[in-house]
Image 1 (cartoon, one colour):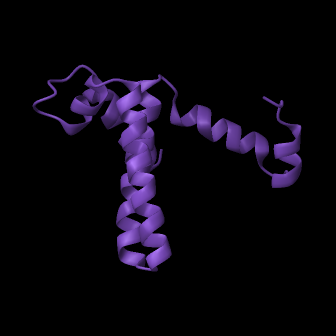
Image 2 (spheres, helix red, strand yellow):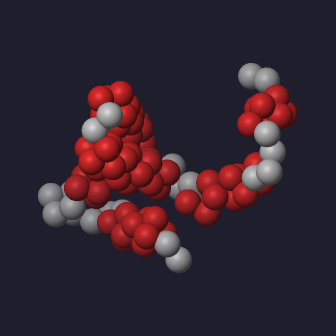
Length: 105
């Protein structure tokens, strides 16, 4: 078990909770699209801090990105373990080879 798994469990425990009592419940109650939008906002904030070179703020924004990523996954019923499985399957592959092996869309 990891801190990300613990966070995922907390997020899942907030599904269906009163949106007035929990930020996570409030996000989830707005639907997957809003969760995705919020994840995107947080990712942009992390990018800004990375460009600025502020390590402390980047770490803080990185934590926000991870949290909002897990909320977005939960909104679509995708588990952290499913994401980790994909990473495990890609392990040892060249990024170029892995990308080339994906079906073209």
